[in-house]
Image (cartoon, rainbow, N blue to C red; front, side, top):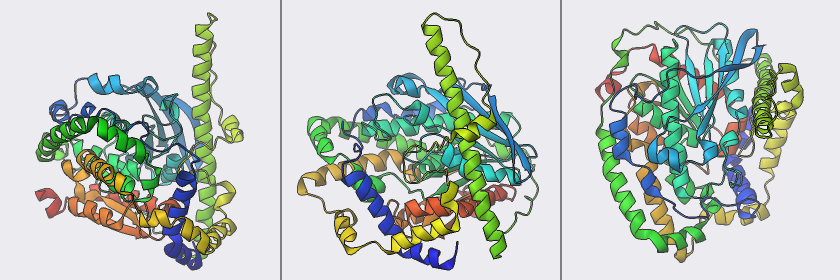
Length: 518
């Protein structure tokens, strides 16, 4: 990225975020979040969660997962294989019953390098808000095969193949749906980490963008062993984004006001119960020390520094295009597999013989153009959009934002609320702070193996929230990239990947004194 573009993003990243929020949310092009109010907050019970994870592994965790190979290819001279698994969510009881039927089956994509690095490192990538499919995360993680790092992407409940038929895009109907999404994602991620450890992956990591970073933090907190953590553009809690950030105008405040009038006592009772439970969880130290076995990984291999010369930068841009193409191929293979399964189910329902499911061919996936990342703030597929001239066009567009547009989005930036909404905004903030504040969870065993990446001009995640997260994670590091939430995801993949690499490398080092004491 040239200096002129970096400067333009640094000055206009927040404006791009607000313009995107205004166009997508304020113009009524999509449904708003939570149009049916709070829902059932009592479905999330931290008291029960503390009991459930006191023994490891939980007895209901599956020991094997049904992986099926989809793609075999090479990237940058390093061979890799792509596998997909579909399995019943490990969630039980009230959580399982509350999930939509489509969300009760989990789906995950695994990218394994043919020549893994020492300790067979693997990073679990969790989805951001609106991240349907795997394209964004495979675009981010697939180039890491060059350094021997595997990627495992989990499809979140309510998204992609798990989206309920009645839901419009990523707009959840209830506040409790957001909490259920997080609760299921956490338990499914713990299952995947357990499976990875049992399969010989000794160095494990959690990564997520935005909302996915919040969930990754919670998973690292609950996993009974050392795990690297890389929250990307992720806040301390979800409260800021919905109640004082750019998603404020994506929220159905009128319906939340009405629902609060109907069931405020139930909301308050659920918050009181959850608050007591989260205090127990924050004090819990129930994990067995899996690091009691000697640290097997010696010093991590010396990772290559970021390219300094313009020739290396040009090569990196080319790699981004290739990564997007490979990610599209992986997503197309996943879609072909899902379509074949639906066709087989339909044939069986009609009484016909079950057809043999065709093996997805990489060539067909590549030609299918499966862009994949349906909706959200920036797709994983780059294609021609990764060329230098198009990045420059983005910078010029951002720099030319007119005073008229600034006036139109002024309401978003100033966040001027009517008096009738103030109580609802305060109550939703309290709910989200109670249920999604990562500081209410235990600290990860290796909080010093955390590299946080924040955007300097982020209108969705306040810099103060990033710093509060760093303060909670003893020994962690914060790195800042220029631009806002949207532009940072589009343009800073290399910085994100380097943060993943560096957090994994820290697992090979002795824990810092502060992290060990915490």
